[in-house]
Image 1 (cartoon, rainbow, N blue to C red):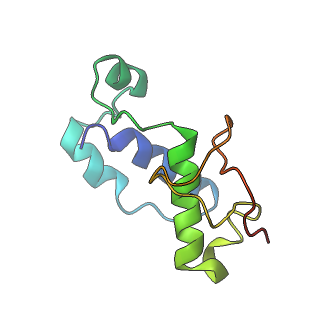
Image 2: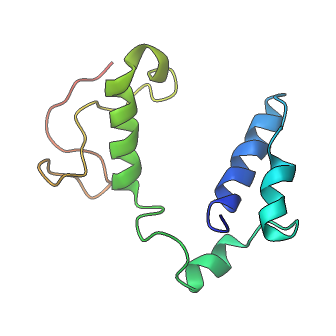
Length: 105
């Protein structure tokens, strides 16, 4: 829970900025004595997953969401390809984008 909370706190902050209600922050902070753990400290002590922040993983995840429900997710990822994968079967460029041809909107 400690490693999940900084991500969730940021997400809730963004949703609050959009005028949406926050129904979970207080409950989540109950797991950490009311404080949001420091992401830098978690990273330094090896408590974050090793893939966190790797662009190739996030590109693959967005691509998967687009394949799952393109009508819904295309507005969030208008230029993302739908052919990216972390399986290693596709080549990636240095920037983490899938290399080679792929469907574009």
